[in-house]
Image 1 (tube, helix red, strand yellow):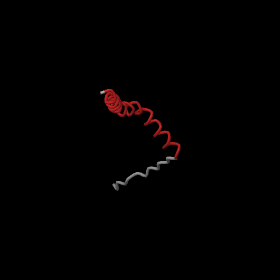
Image 2 (cartoon, helix red, strand yellow):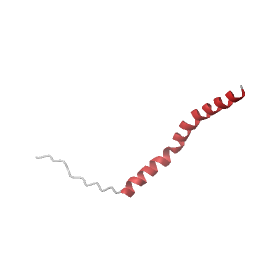
Image 3 (spheres, helix red, strand yellow):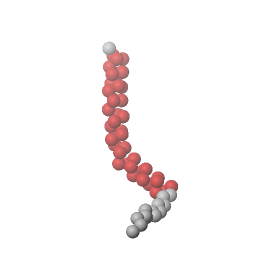
Image 4 (spheres, helix red, strand yellow):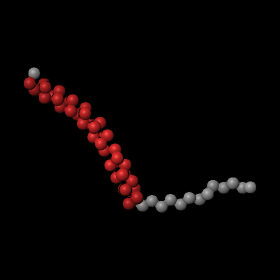
Length: 53
């Protein structure tokens, strides 16, 4: 018994990679948007408050 590693051929092209990246980004864009927008909103509110103080 001589164990060998089976050969696996993977054929990825640019369309597969682009489709995968687009799928990943479309599922996480809302989380990224809130992660950026919430601290940015506090920063802008602080700057606006400073204009009237």
